[in-house]
Image (cartoon, rainbow, N blue to C red; front, side, top):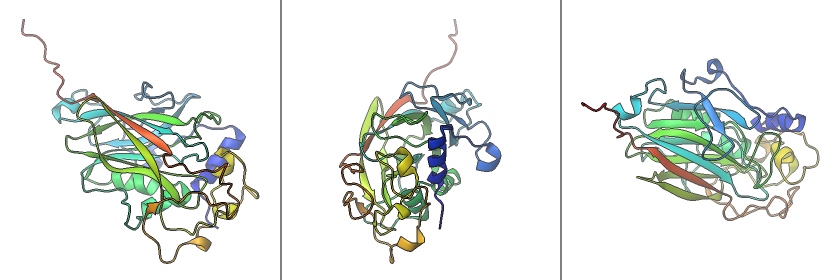
Amino acid sequence: MKKSTLVMVAVLALSGALTVGCSESDTGVNPGAVGVASSEGATGNTTGNALSSSEALFRSYSSTSDDDDDADENNGMRRYRVTIMNMSQGQPMSPPVAATHAKGFTMFAVGKLASRGLEAIAENGDESLMFNRYNNSSQATGVVDVAMPLTRYGTTVGSFKHYASFEINAREDDRFSMAAMLICSNDGFTGLNSVKLPEHGKKVYYLKPYDAGTEDNTELSADIVDGCSALGAVALAGDPNGNENDAVDSSPHQRIRKHRGTQGNGDLDPNAHVIERKVGKVIIELISDGDDEHDEDDD
């Protein structure tokens, strides 16, 4: 039986110990690249490194050092504030991973087979493989592991809320991608793949639900991560009972497609664990275009 990373989320949620943290030594994050992802919306502070009851540590990498005050300007980097909001009444989301990157460096694509990193997100809510893929690639400019789940719309579980914000750098022609598991599903996920960043102002993208095609949709408690009980509308019978991935692995894997919704053929309740046509939205706002003038006046 393979335990999901969300099993620990479930334990933390049920015990009330709801802050998530990791050290630079065991994450491979560049020194100085760790910040705070605020759950207080797009205006939250993202420059510190201390946790509070309403904030969670995220892992981030940027090709521009945060320690160089002039790095954004010298390299023509743009700075964006991103807010990811869960709009679903029935589906909590696993900790999202997001990246800015070259146009062809895709995170997933409908009609294609899921990568190992996407499979890990969709089945287990494990964003580490995808984070490392972008963190270690020259095609990525910035990558953020939000490192906290997003609760169902309008709900709070401990310090977890249904939205989170962070800042990320991007080059002029970069695209933006993100992915997160729909926790109360076998291999459902949501995300954006290689969407355009705003040239000015902000863009709003709505999140659709997808089926990764890597697991049979049994909808049984034994095949669903325990985080569904901790963060979902109703607890599943038998939890905590892990997550039996191998027993329900689709053979062969199917192509990524639009999710058909909770069918109610197992332990999931199609009313309580509903998968809406729009499960969330992402707001991307340009906050610095990298061309700001900082020269002193000659007079």
